[in-house]
Length: 150
Image (cartoon, rainbow, N blue to C red; front, side, top):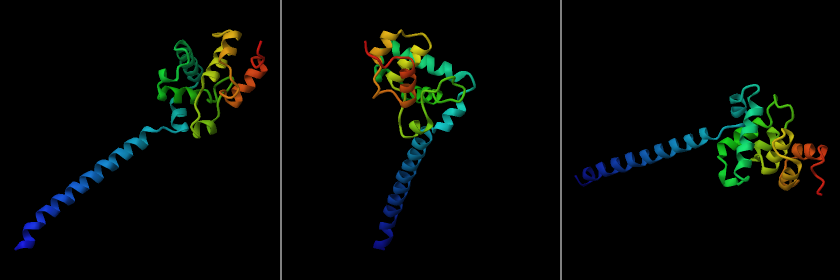
């Protein structure tokens, strides 16, 4: 008789444990699906939309003084992929850089905005830092004479 009264407690404990494990698994799956890959983002960017995406993102970020706290990480990731999109006339980023966690920097955006005529050379040079810019952007800056400090 003593053993019969203890059984309902173990059933309740087992059910609670199953509930905790279920909630934890659900949270892990949600977190995994929230992290989009380069290919996921690439599939969301239509032809011709890449230039617009990078331009509007960098323009808004420059308007906020390139403050990193003013950046939505999702928008930054999307603009970063757009900067590597095949439809871009000039690419500023690579898939490998994205996959290791790199994202557009203020330097990358400043060089992009210079290329599109939004920033002048002096403003661009004030944001230019070869250690902050990515390799492709540094190549662009060098070819445009932005690496020389006056």
